[in-house]
Amino acid sequence: MFKEFKKFIMRGNMLDMAVAVIIGGAFGAIITSLVNNILMPLIGLALGGSADFSNAFVVLKEPATIPEGGLPETLAEAQEAGYTCLGYGAFISAIITFLIIAICLFLVIKAFNKAASLRKKEEVEAAPTTKTCPFCKSEISIEATRCPHCTSELPEEEAAE
Image (cartoon, rainbow, N blue to C red; front, side, top):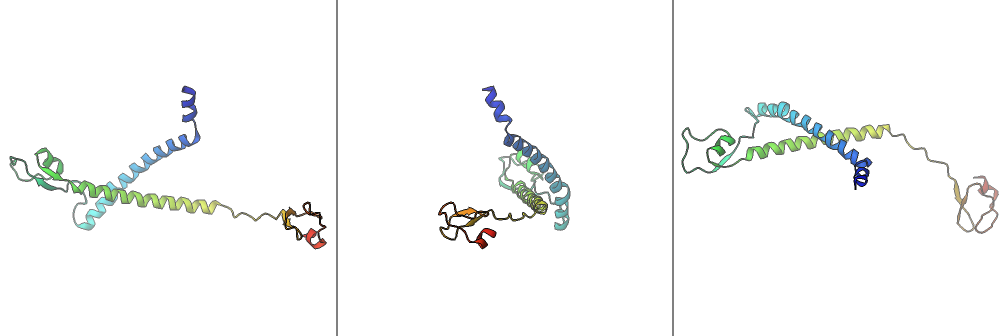
């Protein structure tokens, strides 16, 4: 059983998958930083306020005893005080983060495909190695002077091609 497990673990695709997960985690951290530290402040600036939607919520049901000081400002405070809340802000933040990650992945993959296509050399078409016998229509060697299938002698111009 240990040998089978070792064989399974050492397969190339398993190692590729492990590398992909590690790189994906690192890429996720970069994207999270991009969203939280660069894009969300710019979105907030454009909207004239904060772009932190994580504390946006709607109270669905108030607690039996309403605490002093009115409605709490954050979702965590409202939930701690006993309010039943619909926290739509965290969902909006998750959608924005997903869209930004999707755009970044699209751009990275597009750049990778462009670089890969530039690296490919145009394949030179190989010279033909076979021809068709004009009598029996069988495929034969280009250098043949007689067809091995029907034994017909090939005309000189056919043999010269």
